[in-house]
Image 1: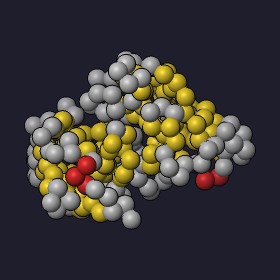
Image 2: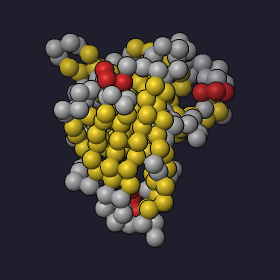
Image 3: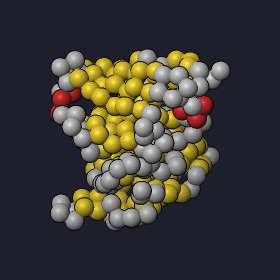
Image 4: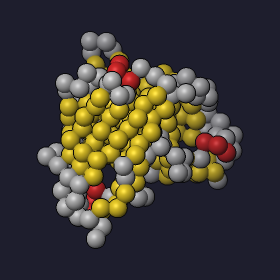
Length: 113
Length: 116
């Protein structure tokens, strides 16, 4: 199984400041035949289901604000919120869909400082 | 509107069974791979099962293998999860999620509580 490790577990950032979340996979999730990283990021607000933010490690889902960006390749990935807004308070999860089981990271809780 | 609506959750005794359903609307259900993901109270997300768009490829997490069965009916635009031999540790919100790779579409979830 591919283990997904997120850091930090929680993060407090001032409004308008940058938030950075890291995700490391125990094996590469880069599929060589198409050069795509099978890595997604989700946002989950309290009492709501998760919402897809980023897929293929760096492609924003339709409707996602451009302050959210994803980067990385192979085993190391980053989700960046360039200017934190109040509505971004949530738990963020990375997930690999390179192989089964489709494992998630443990989540990073983002709060306002 | 693109939508997935789960139903069938509730309180069940240890060792009991439950069948969850997930009704799809607003998108071409038959072209999507489908998954069940659960979230225990206060915990993170756990993927538990996958079924291909045609239903011929199925995977399970080790934690539910042999106890849970995933199925789908493309004509009815519905996904199912038959759960048996339920344990206290199966207590969670169960989400169905449609995927084209990443999990693009999520339902609101249905709560399953396993307790005597």
